[in-house]
Image 1 (cartoon, rainbow, N blue to C red):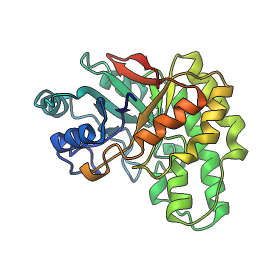
Image 2: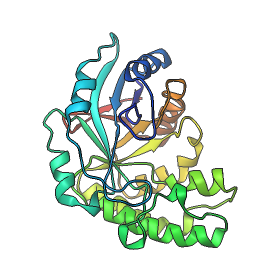
Image 3: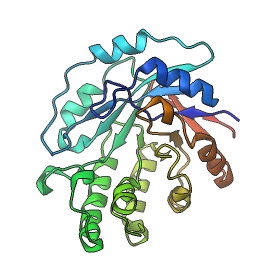
Image 4: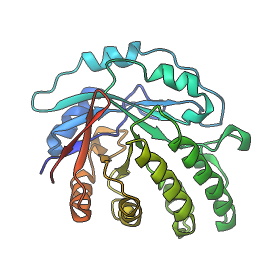
Length: 263
């Protein structure tokens, strides 16, 4: 089965110290044929302060220094909160060597503090519901942008609301508004990713994939969201099996154009 990991982080991301060559070799050892580096460029930092892009130099230097026989390497980026500065986002993704851009929502919009959900008060389910109402608004803000290829980890808040805070929250009440975001993506020929969160959340994607398919979606990428070599590509094989079960082909990207692989 063809396997690809199109979401991972190296030492160029603020939350990783991983050596890129070690990450690539770990992906190859797992059985991945194609890998895309997607280091962070979030337009808001963890606390909601605007980020300015320092330039492509370190990303290009790192990418062009790597070669791993047997593994196709792509240059990507995780672009977070693009709605906060659409002009800057457009300048960032104008890099001609760029293969792939994930559009992410980690933070609420600046009008509501701009903080990463990880750092918010998740102590009660009521507080989580309030956050989710705002988060889904931000999903729709991000979906309307033209500066990315797939919408990342739609279930991102549940990592912390359920995994960290111990709640048992489901996204069902927000499905109509998530479907709005999906329909916006589909109209723009964009897709979503199944983000395995280092192999922890594969099965959690079933209802989201069903909703996306019902909306007419066809573009789905896979990413482990690994930040360390020992987590690289965990859950990718299971994720590919889930896509196959739902009738999706696996999408990869080269120069911002999707390619589909039968599973």
